[in-house]
Image (cartoon, rainbow, N blue to C red; front, top):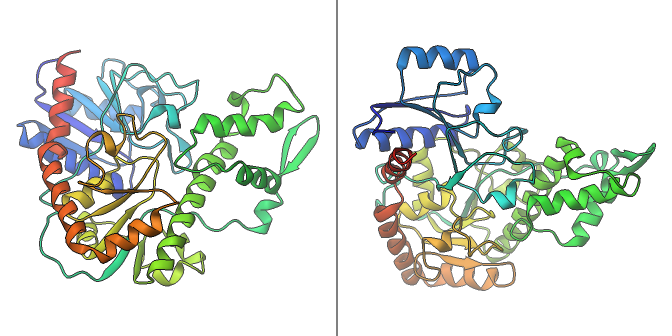
Length: 384
């Protein structure tokens, strides 16, 4: 494919996606490529109509594949970029195929299952915008801050939901949760297919031919998204709050339903520049996710601020921050065993931690802006 003249980019109607598609638009435009962005995703017929009028060289969609668009014109060059495995209850990697090119910002062997057939794909992390996430001198207000989603606490009613595992036999969801917790599953050390295998065992006791393919989507999402995320965030934040209660949490309203976190919840931040202001006004920013090359990681680094990033079972993979940045020089790594120690040092030794933040910003400017990502896409598609 020759260098594109114009492209179109679509994503979900969500502030995180909107910030990303607008950043990517600026990246393409810096390279002389006209770019249209829109949200939410259009229906197949509407997308066909748009393409007929706008005539883009390709349409890039975040977290949607061509096969998931009913009535899409097959002549449209569709590019899929995976950022999440589940979006608003929709499982992105189910019935996922048909796109001209596929990029992923997540490690698919963690989030996809054996039925994923998205085709030949390249790893492409998200990026950041130095014109938005600046390193302006900003008064520090908080010792620690965390930005992210939290699900509401598990209720007694939820524990008492019966799950039919076959042959008219039911098991309470609470019993499965209890077994799950005993297994020691953690967001940083377990892949989705391992969680699905664990769940399938309850059904296989009644039906040996049962496979993970037959698992209800809602049950998979509860365990591989809601429960696993809740466990990791609670464990980390409980340690941080033991060190200092000068803490800021930003995210969805369900944080308010947790008595231990509600006093530190300041609401949601939807605007990128406000996020940058928070990162700069925090002494120690914290990341909690198996996806360590996350957009928030890059945004914090772009602000020139030091960052704690959790270690992960997949730190040696191309998808990890460790593949692009150096622990101890560009960020500080932690796990549950040493979090208290490293967080206290980061708070106490601010000269050291600020030097790490400055190092990180230099690395960002060298290779991790939206212009870099747009250039990668252009070069990669030119070879297909």
